[in-house]
Amino acid sequence: MGTLYLVSTPIGNLEDITLRALRVLKEATLIASEDTRQTRKLLSRYSLPTRQVSYHEHSPASRLASLLRTLQDGDVALVSDAGTPGISDPGYALVRAAWENGHDVCPIPGASAPLAALVASGLPADTFSFLGYLPRQRAERRRQLEAHAGDPATLVFFEVPHRLRSALIDLEAVFGADRPAAICRELTKIHEEIRRGPLSELRRHFAENEPRGEFTLVVSGARPAARWSEAEVRAALRRRTREGDSPSGAARHVAEHSGWRRSEVYRMTLEDRQASQKRSGGDG
Figure 1 (cartoon, rainbow, N blue to C red):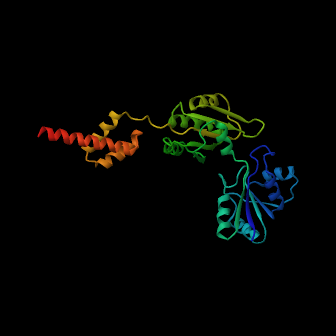
Figure 2: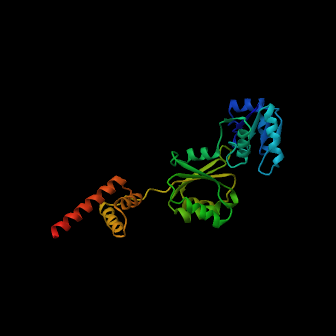
Figure 3: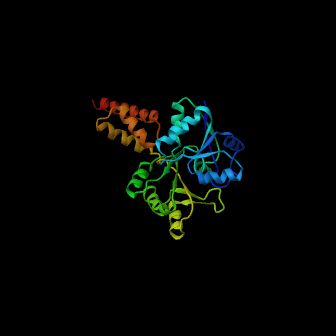
């Protein structure tokens, strides 16, 4: 039984290939390439004679079956146009089929445009969401952006040159003019450029300069809402209980929106309740 190798290839500079990746590409029975012309440049650079076959989103179902037959007796190396296979390309279908048919799947780490852009952006990288390519239609694109408007995680996605300007207009409209962002163009290539700034500044720059090349965008997550004052918390608790919430239900709701811990809010609920009982007893 052969192994399916997921081989990361350079996203621009052909020197960004690991020694292990070169060895696997050389020793594999077959290379399944998203674009054989792109992969041929890499193979020629390093004098690798391994046979290629195309495998992309428009490949017939018979191509997947053929690759699985090859895996019966040999190893297959899967590569995308650039970067890590399975990221915004059809590689996942072959990976899933390989697992389902009892083959080992082995990732060969390497270049990845989303990660390269993220770490170079200067924005938080501890938590992030990769959105792939934004929708082409404006209404659908805005709906997707609105769904992530309050997400505290850093957002990473791709965009093509002819849609970059309209995408930046929508980003500013949904996320606000001051949201920090970075636009990474032609990563690892001769004309590599990384621009950082608020969305409004980036929109203006590309309104005046023609977008060219491949773009990866990184946008800061939403800032946490300002912490409520204690007076605001107590007022919200009284309002919720007047509307019929239980003490625990009121505390849970207010904690979710106030920036206070639930235990702290619940303590205030009990204090207000005890104070109310004392007042009622004194009036009697």
